[in-house]
Image (cartoon, rainbow, N blue to C red; front, side, top):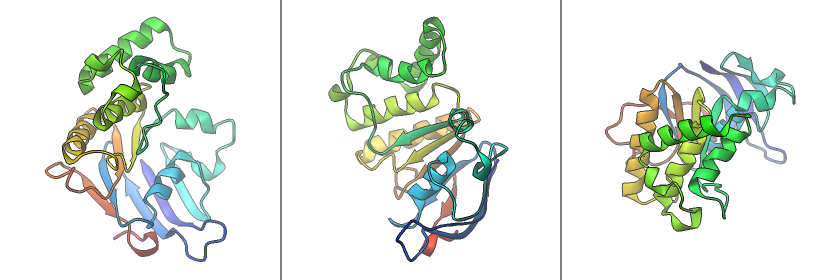
Length: 218
């Protein structure tokens, strides 16, 4: 379960908060679309969940962790429970699709044999087995984002976060990516997508959390 309890977030030098007295509860295994105009706090919501930035006031609880009390030593272990997909892909040039995804596995100290088994299965699930030996510069935007999704899922996260993941995609690529998010959700993973792209998610079963002025839940 994820809980935001009366969370307010100011950035240094800003007179208005990006989130103000915001409260919300997200249950295990939910599919959430976090919506709202630019500047209302969608990316800040994701960064707060990642523990990249602190709240100004209030509390956030994620998977039984109180984020305000996480130590620097605990934070990397907490983040291993989260998978993240970014708008700008963040793939490593000069490394193959497989190598990009395997790097996330090597960080947790798994064996090459186990990596091969997990990654092969994941590539089949996401329909990207044919991209195994390709390089990021050879891929379309939609293909890159599928690889990013594989990388985000490779260590079995409990929560998948996506920050404007369709911002650089065509409408068809966006629809396909949202279909994969729904597929991931059906595996029991909590999925939270910060987006302004409701069209891409049309027809899918999700719950919307709308951030309005100053980030209040609508």
